Image 1: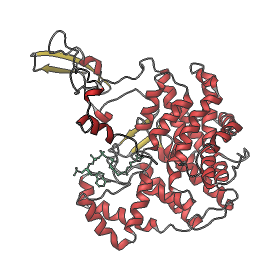
Image 2: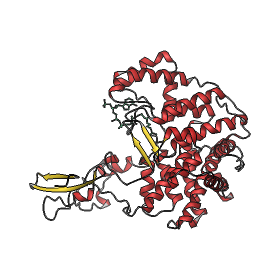
Image 3: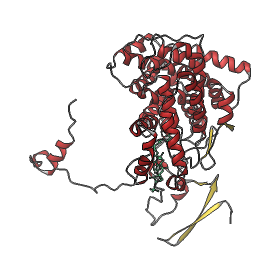
Image 4: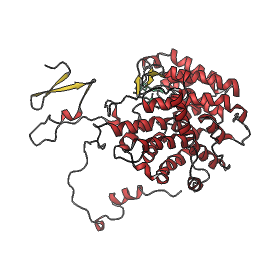
Length: 452
Ligand code: ACO
């Protein structure tokens, strides 16, 4: 018997099947041969939320959640955060190897000179309400790029794909900053291509704004703070098959152009369970208010009444390696901009939680979001810009994953199955029979949209 195989006995029929194993997985299609009767469809696996389903073979990002390891193309995230720039990491993700100086310079130039957006995009932006959420604007404007660059549909032309990559990664900060300034009612600041990627973004965001209230950043700080932001971008550049990355692979499997597919990924990131946890951390820290209230808060969490936001992760059952790096970055930011008082509450909360049996037993450690919100707030980013910052960094990973999926001969248009539990064939009920006050009429009324 083949050692790399699984023997399955179907207790319904008494039949035994041997299915091959590869890379610790069995092919779901190998289950189809297992039938209760001749006309049967065959066995499927049921996995809501894809908790235990590998959807692709990938060479981009490796995570070992138990050991707290994250690597891009084999390189530990700690080394990349210390030694690389975000654009160098983007190159690494896309091509699979670190660039030499000349390659990096060509790459940097390619991205640097695609930062402008068509003036039509600006008019498109103007159509949004004054208080539009910047992430909503970003999702829509990324999709709109596909109409400005219809040649992006030539997805099987490698050169064309590279140009769209330049455009996307270059324009993400411009779209993000424009979305923010639209909301603030401030004139847009055009990209300055003499600046680095992160400097350019900070300049487009904050140029002409005086530091006020809890917004501390002034233009003098940009060169120093740009490196910290660059590190945060590196940490968020890719994270294998999460919700947004799976979304782009799924949409891309229909051979959709990259801009439209990326907008779907950004839409997934917009959800509070994905890109919104760092905002929840800030709310939680404010609600706690002071260090002496932490023990009572932890008791509430342990009683199941509250969630400790920024703790726990589906994959990491150890310290999220990105959280360690972010914690150090926080110190650098506070040295320049002054200490965000929330950090003291966060540090004490982490200390208490890591010593508490409840969290230790469940392997709950700080994740990337525990400290990132505190840093972003110190920069002066409003909380609804947090997922936008995430999206700027993740665009490089999304694009690379989209392209890997496209080139994978094993991939097909994504089309999961379902377990149907609805009604059997039902006879049509004419409207006349649906009397006012009947169950059907009441059900209809309750689903009418409420007016704004
Ligand atoms: N606070 C308190 N208890 C928690 C937390 C938490 N943050 N996270 C998990 N637990 C508990 C659960 O209640 C459960 O307890 P039980 O065994 O007594 O029922 C146990 O730990 C296991 O939790 P699961 O829900 O099975 O863990 P899962 O892997 O499904 O969830 C998740 C991971 C969603 C991230 C969760 O830890 C959580 O909600 N964390 C807070 C939100 C957050 O920080 N999200 C950001 C994640 S990072 C990112 O997306 C970029």
